[in-house]
Image (tube, rainbow, N blue to C red; front, side):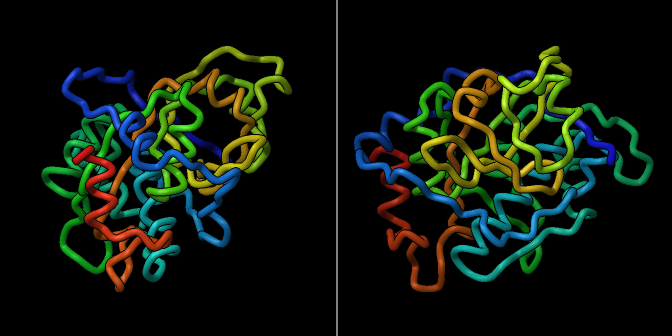
Length: 249
């Protein structure tokens, strides 16, 4: 099965909120393992034909959050491609202008203008902040308490040659030539590594692989998707408390 990349080089903006230090203050304890991805029906979402990985990751996070917090919501491929088009100028009808996505542009659009999601007109991200990809505790906190982390990686050819769902282990491949950037949804972890969605498949990579290939990561808070009917997250935290932890207030 074919698969596409589509994450453009990271955009560094000094104004972007640094999330990990604040989460470390408010949430010093991190469980040894947490996995929100079990039983979530991830899809390819068009990423076998187009470089829409950033928006496939958005769809994967939405499915992960709602599966845990409310009731499963799965975006259609058309919705994913329309979101890709709204942010980047990609044409879903012809495939023109398939030039990939700067993750910071996606996040700012999602925050300010909203992305399409089933069951409502637009889905607005509540808040986000950067996490240093080398900060494994920060990544764990983002996954555990916020339900997932949006990460960008540089994919070596050896991983492109693997079957879908095979473990991404840097030490098990011979061709480490980088072939492009890719956006993935980090949705679980254990002491050995991370569970993530890519190309419609729940996949695993060791921690040392992630720190070698990751070049950006973001913790996200979604009131519309991560907060259940009682007004709390699946961890039992009230929304206002989570928002205060994310924003450092």
